[in-house]
View 1 (cartoon, one colour):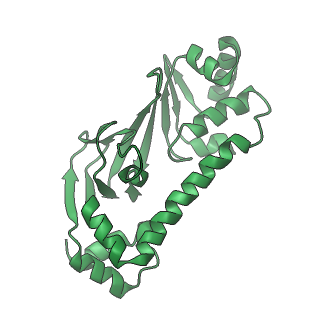
View 2 (tube, rainbow, N blue to C red; view 1 turned 120 degrees about the vertical axis):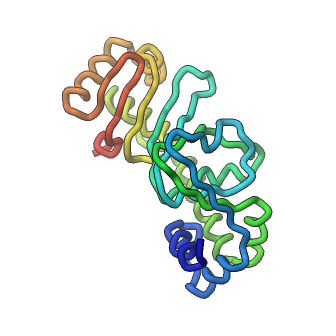
Length: 223
C-alpha cells in the first residue's frame, strides 16, 4: 500500500484525527504497519485470545459474537469498516479479546503491533491523546450506566437489555437467548416477555425464531 493510500485509510479512524497531512505522511513512512486480507467466513480473533496489536478494519464487514459469563446467551453484531477492534484490550489487567470476530465479506485490515503502538505514542502526542479520549469516553459512559433513569415498563427494560449488551448502539443484532433466560435477565415472567416481544415483532422491530431474537436495526428500538 502506498503512503498516500495508507494516509487516506488512517484518516478515517478517530485515533489519527488532528494529525496534519505532513504528520500523517511521516507516520505512514516511518511506522511498520502490517496488512492482512481475509475472505468471507474467516476468523479474525477468538474470545480469550491475547490482544497484542491494533486491528484496523479498512474495508469489509465483520460478525462479532460476545458470550455471557455464564455461557447462557450470545449476542452477534454486524460491524462495517472503518472499525478498530477492541483497542481497550491492548492494555490493562486483562489484555485479551472479549469477543470472537469472523469476516462476513472479504475484509482488509491494517495492523499495528503493541511495540509499534508504543513507539507511535512516543512520537505523536496527538495519537496518545486521541486514544486517551476514546478510552475515557468509553469509561465515562459505562460509569453513568448505573445512574440512568430506570425503565418505566417491561418493554423499556427489554430494550435496555438489548442496548446494554451491544458493542455499538445501532445496526443489526442477533440475540441467541431463550425466553426464560431473557425473562430472568429483565426480572419478569416468560409469558409477559413473550407478549412484549411478539408485539414488537408485529411492529416490524424484530423477528423471533426459536431461541433467537433478530433485530434488523437497533436504533429503531431506541426511537
